[in-house]
Length: 404
Image (cartoon, rainbow, N blue to C red; front, side, top):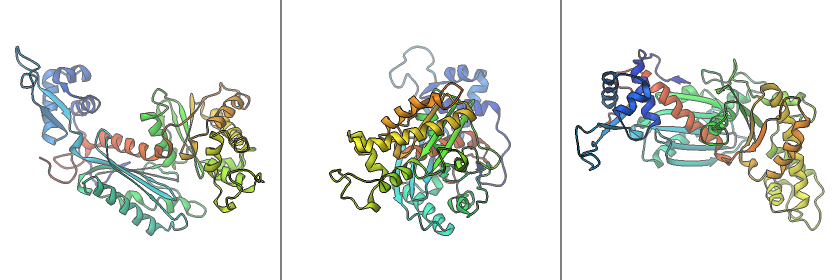
């Protein structure tokens, strides 16, 4: 993550950061609440509140007496974060899709759009143009513009380092997926580029199956496997952003490649001999999909269930690898293909204790479906905005348009 301007403002007073952090988590509050939440004196707290009101980040509400809730003594001043002060943008920039969400500072969605891409047309210039167009389209649908954006976060299927850049790959795939996006989007005050599986992990920790966990792995399991790893409450990245990169699966018996569950299920069913009376028997081979097999298995089709159980055994082997490397409390299988894989995960749960020596992590299916990456991108953009807004250069830490 970086602030897009080259210069950085001097660090704000600790009291200002603390009061803003309190306000971001609170609803409507009074100064006594902020004092108790930050441990600062009344004078320090009031000064910080007034300064934050001056930036536009907080608003003062009518006091309790004016709303009929208070009748005696001096009414307390009431405040809240201005969630509409700016917007954040989250983007799931997959190889074959773009999902873009515009949200306010509390994460309420203002607009969400999804676009399918031709995966064979992934040249850097085309991808940059498609991402820019998708962001502008979603902002327009939300009734906003680039000038309203405080932070933007994009998830890509590539390792990403702390500066938002991807390393060289043998066929340059990673840099085609992340073609200098941190520079492309530098019109935004705060820009964050992340690996897509890492953002799925952010989503699970924010609103998914890991809100109560500090040690977990999210396995993004669609076209290719990717993993977001959180240890001791920290999202791991590595020197080049390669933590969770699954090319290592090429060397693991019983896994073999980084191809994801969606890709493998599709391959398995296309290679299979389909019974003549089966619902898929009349479907052309090149139109058979793993999704169809999962859906039929969920409806009770015994022939399709074999493939789902095979996927479960694969998940158990992969979970054992991550269980041994990171010792997580929980492993969450995410992505659109995860919907309906309950029987496969049950197979994996039974098998996993036999695959490793450490206590087996809990295995879960994500409830976020195909939205996990873009949900995580929005959460990460808000996190970056919250951490960085007071550090932006200029007299008012705000997006570029003047606000009332």
